[in-house]
Image (cartoon, rainbow, N blue to C red; front, side, top):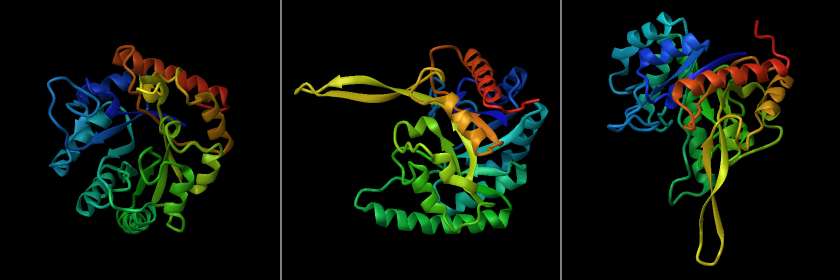
Amino acid sequence: MKFAVFTDSTPEWTPEEAAKLLAGQGWQGIEWRITDQEASATPGFWAGNRATWPLTGLEDNLEAIRTVTRDAGLEFASLGGFVPPTQRDDVDRMLAATAALGAGQVRIMGLPVEKGQTYREAFAAYRGDWEWVAERARHHGVRALVELHFDSLTPSASAARRLLEGLDPQYVGVIHDIGNLVIEGWEAHSLDLLGEYLAHVHVKNCAFHLAGVESDGTLRWEPKWVPLREGRANLPELFRALAAVGYDGWVTVEDFSTAVSLPERTAANLEYLTGLAIAAGYDLG
């Protein structure tokens, strides 16, 4: 098992700073956020994130991405793409970039049910998109990943398994994300259900907080990202489950909590997850 950080959760650092600081803390890999984003005077997770490589002109930045990563002594855990499978030209560019960098795998962004669609109509079209993605991933010799994500067509392991069933797991796979699953899609045996399609693991945590009270007295609760130790997701249980199914790949952290500074957060997360892995029986030597 190896540990990495997704740079969607390190908005204050430039790519060079992120790579150098994470390597110095002992992280083994990095998952780069690649997307065109809105400008912001203040660095944020989703706008003005300084540790982001733009999709526009990506090909011109490949050597810089490779150099920043390798010079820090880090490996590519994956590429964190934000391109949905319907944008086929950009999907193919992401797959080609993954191959050129030797990153191995890349996230293809999930899709929701659009207004005017039924779930069955949307899912059938999504399956067709992923059949195409699988063939292009085979062409490039990389693996395309779909994430278990709330408000998408694949919020659960069973939905993702249904999406990919029959496609070659060498070229398509699933990102298991326990933080997303406690919002929508939790299944007790999700890792076993995914089987050969379990390709990657994201870790974050959330808790539900009282967001308001309706005029009739109904309480409205909403999820909020919190430190890894504090949320609804049982991370010690997750690591025991990962060990039970023989998972020995990357675990990438995307911690969107802000209770402590970014350097403190990343250092503490690595210490915590390393302890969980050892307690679950992993040999990290």
